[in-house]
Image (cartoon, rainbow, N blue to C red; front, side, top):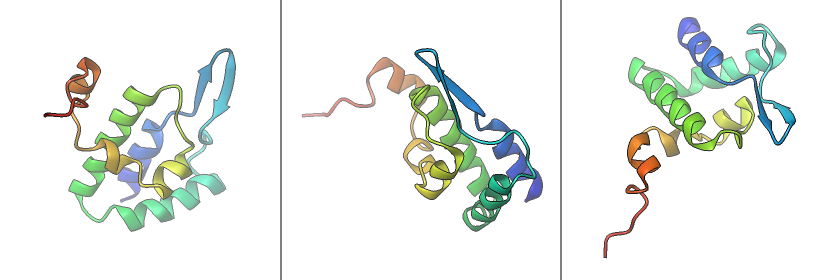
Length: 103
């Protein structure tokens, strides 16, 4: 599980820049207080390889769609943001077809 958390941690952006302003999303160090808190939360969320893959897929989709409007890493875990993004096709959303309502 430590390797899985480290993979998640290193894939989460450290900072974003928007209109010339930088916002920090997480610490660089994987042994910081923030990282340790997130690791505890991650262990509660991820029980299987499938859980880990869902979180990473959700993270990648979230980053691709919401940059530079990302939340900090703690918010991502606490609000379970990956759930909103883990089952969508990023290419379809970019084309605008995923969001159209069928009438």
